[in-house]
Amino acid sequence: MGVSDGWRLNHPWAAVYSFGINRPQLAKPAARLAFGTDIGLLYDATAAIGQLPAGSSVLDVPCGSGVALRGIRPGQGLRYAAADIAPAMLDRTRHTADRLGVADQVLTVEADAGRMPFADGQFDLCVSFTGLHCFPDPYAAVTEIARALRPGGTLRVSWMRTDAGPQYRPHLAIGRLSGLLGPSATTDEVRGWLAATGFVDIDIVTSGALAYTSATRV
Ligand SMILES: C[S@@+](CC[C@H](N)C(=O)[O-])C[C@H]1O[C@@H](n2cnc3c(N)ncnc32)[C@H](O)[C@@H]1O
Image (cartoon, rainbow, N blue to C red; front, side):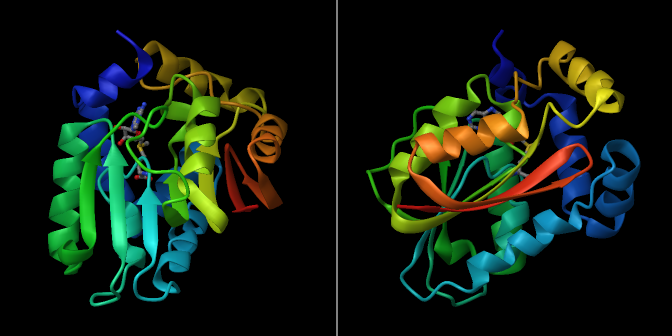
């Protein structure tokens, strides 16, 4: 079984993670305790979605249970593609979209982040939250995201980095043994990947085991 198969087949952790991430009051102390990170930075990053004008297109990959959908305003007029490899996660995203009253703007797409069925330059914004460390080939995902963003489009990405210190090595090792984590990457590696795939204005904030990044596609 490959790294993404555990997710695709709805590993029990997927339900636990989804339950927690959709409850900031629970996720914030849990993420602080387990990963030393301010996961509020992820919730804050979803605000970029709500600032887009009507007609804008957004790619959310991997969407998971739809945590980023909280950034969409009802009636905003977005074309929002929520992509994930796991059918069960896409069900959760549809449920979240209904709950938030934004289902008319959200299209769920079953896709591998390393090989996505989207046209070149199709999106104005891509959000990719806590995903890179779950992919077998995170560089392929960055390349695909870069391809799917239009020139001037923006990216918000967060991931569990491999250069956060020895205290987080057990987390990475357990995640890999469980079949849920891939190789991930250091902060410098992701910075280099973004630069190599045509991003500028790369801003990376590290907070505990995670990094929170924004960048613009040239
Ligand atoms: C930790 S969750 C993050 C989901 C969401 N962005 C969030 O922050 O809650 C990781 C997600 O990556 C998805 N995933 C794993 N491998 C994937 C792949 N190769 N392509 C697309 N999605 C994948 C999983 O199904 C899961 O929904």
